[in-house]
Length: 178
Image 1 (cartoon, one colour):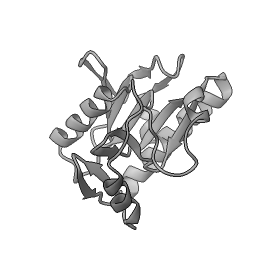
Image 2 (cartoon, helix red, strand yellow):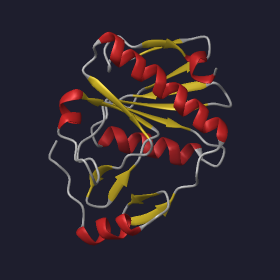
Image 3 (cartoon, one colour):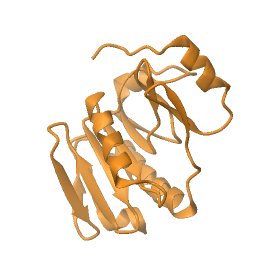
Image 4 (tube, one colour):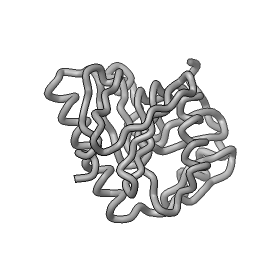
């Protein structure tokens, strides 16, 4: 996949903002701060993935905190959590937005999110190179995994979620919500 570039005026406008926002189809969209439960689930998933990558020697890096990934000239999106190939992480810029796609994207659904918007964002991540998108629904204790072939798999709290990237990762879904 070619390295995406941004319209310079959109980069400047996005960089000037002091609030949480994303660039969506050329429009700067303010993102509402997450609530307590959202942050707790996000932190737990980040911890589980980070612990796995460190202890297993997986060639991947876990990032959180809404890092901006460039999809194309009119879109910079920020996942809740991303798993990035170690080689890609080595070439990530120290400042600015990331010009490549994560292997795995985790989006934690907030009460203010619509399923339609979350699903569209998941498909967008796949269209721009992600190998899987985990949509995590804390209220229902559910994870819906979106794959590049447009199939989905649902995992409930008692199920074990396993992932191809990072290779060998598996975890009972209930652990995300403890």
